[in-house]
Amino acid sequence: MTHRGVLIGCGFFARNHMEAWTRQAGVKIVGVCDTDPAKAEAFAAAYGAEAGTDAAEMLARLRPDFVDIATTVGSHRALVELAARHARLVICQKPFAETLDDGAAMVAACAERGVVLTVHENFRWQRPIREMKARMDGLGKPRFLRLSFRHGYDIYANQPYLAEVPDLALTDVGLHLFDMARHLMGDVVRVACEVQRRNPAVKGEDAFTALLRHASGAVSSVECSFHSVLEPDPFPQSLALLEGDEGSLELTQGYAMRLHKGGRVESFDTEPACPDWGAKPWHLIQDSVVAFQAHVAAVLDGRAEAAPSGAHNLGTLRLTLAAIRAGQTGQTVDLA
Ligand code: NAD
Ligand code: 89Y
Image (cartoon, rainbow, N blue to C red; front, side, top):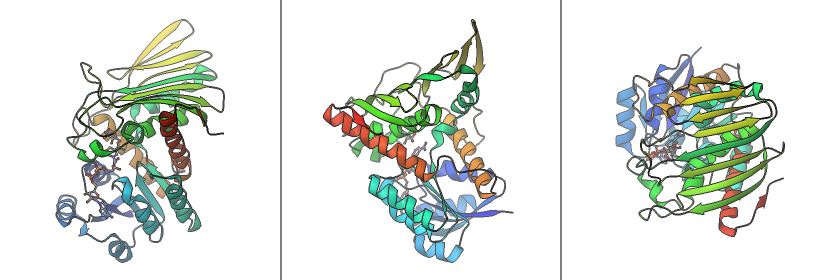
């Protein structure tokens, strides 16, 4: 059975969505929509789908099984609420929402109609993080996680709107890191955070250092900078250290993973293959889009539960907003 989808938003990142959908068995994107007709038509020609500029009209006419929303955050609430009236599964790109009210309304709109809502939270689907999750059972009780995402890559060339975002590092990549921390270590009950504005050419805080306390008692240290001078530049790798009572997993630059256990160290290469349509250094992210979409196909088939669900991602939004508040006030914020 082929699941029919409509893509909304034909911009920079949506190309990755479309290249991956085109190769995903059991799925066909039948319509592509952008308020800019030239972008919709370019995608329609490249990927063999109908073009449209009005999402409401296109969804009413094509009646897809699922809708993939790849627009920037300001349009997410209206588009998720619209999609919930026309499909049985909705995917929303990150950042999920700007406010908790918007996020809760989006979760409710889908829940009321029995529609599955998932957030395109692809960092947890990156190969090194999948491998870390799979191997962490052997570490004993998880106690400490460090996640570090520091680079100086010019992200503004492809995504110029980022230069205007006030809480940039927290809302662009911080939420990916917080999702990974929750995925690996469980829910967070307390957060402290220091933010910095490093690059004078951008408006927002482009660096942060956060300290999380998990419900389990574990602690995570999560840091991010978009203005670090490093050779070779690690973008877009997240470096990590996960310590349990019986062992540790280390992820260092160049995708090298090391398992420390029982007086021995085992090494693994966790670099994903570069998709034939992809390019380095984006292959890490492009491969994770493929993995996420294979998961969505399994959800559409009824073989898996959406991960992360919209409801789970609301917790990540809550944590991100709490970290922003902690950065502004200098106070630790309780989430319990
Ligand atoms: P973009 O501005 O290049 O593309 C967005 C497109 O959506 C534009 O073409 C715009 O015309 C269209 N659009 C806006 N509102 C619309 C509406 N109501 N109906 C139809 N089309 C509409 O943005 P981008 O860089 O592709 O980013 C899109 C989203 O993807 C952002 O939220 C960004 O944070 C996210 N993103 C995610 C990753 C990741 O790894 N998960 C990486 C990059 C970007
Ligand atoms: O938007 C960001 C994301 O989600 O991954 C990397 C990025 O494209 C730039 O920081």
